Amino acid sequence: MTIQLPEYPKSDGPVAAQRLARHREKAAEARAALAAELAKLDAQAAETLQVWDQRDNTHDRLTALGREQSEQERKDRR
Amino acid sequence: MTKRNINESRMLARQQQYGNREQERAAIEAVDDFIFDKVRFVEKMTVESAHRFMDESQAHLSEAEALTTELRELRRDLDYTDRITPHEAGKRYRTLLMRVEETQKKLDRVEQESTWLEAKTADPYSNYVSMTDKYNGILRPDLP
Image 1 (tube, each protein chain N blue to C red):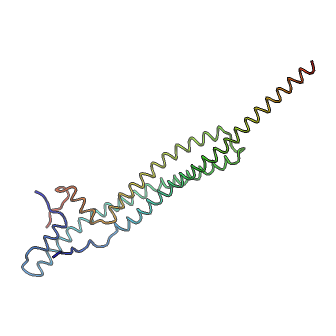
Image 2: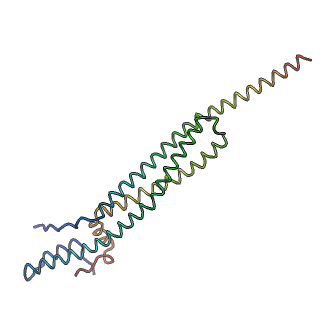
Image 3: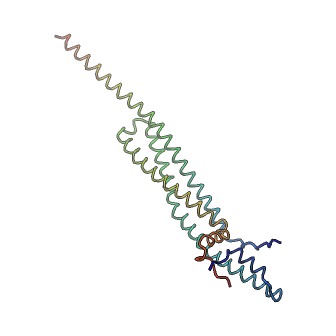
């Protein structure tokens, strides 16, 4: 015959365990939110860098074109 | 001397021969109460340490929240390309990235520690039994 042992009475432990579970979830959520925001930032940064690069290229090309035009005008005047 | 497992000791108290029902009831109750007091003591310490841990690690959760906001702000500044210079953007990005890596490690530890403490507090009795089984002879109590 199996003897059934009386259970340990209800106590504070399981309540703390529930709080810990919520705490763990909040940490996981915070970690996921950080990763998601970093991914969005990376995507935006890639887009912005492209705009900046394009702007630099445009600036360089326009400056070069302006320089060529000035030289041509100087030659023409001579 | 090998001490008995907690449940075995409780069983043994129930299998003994007693003079009368009152003696039996008193002996069994004494063993159960003795063990439950030990469980309660360990449980109290574990719960206190869980509360302390949650209070202390709350700072890491707040830090992560603040950092997420800072990442969002930099993203918005980058969206309006004239709000920020490439050098300033690079400097802010680098600093933020280092902080993100550091904070993610802290959050990892918070998750691991929470899981560990959760298992211990969810079932204080089983926790005590496995603890005394693990450290046989050191932690197993001498029963009354």
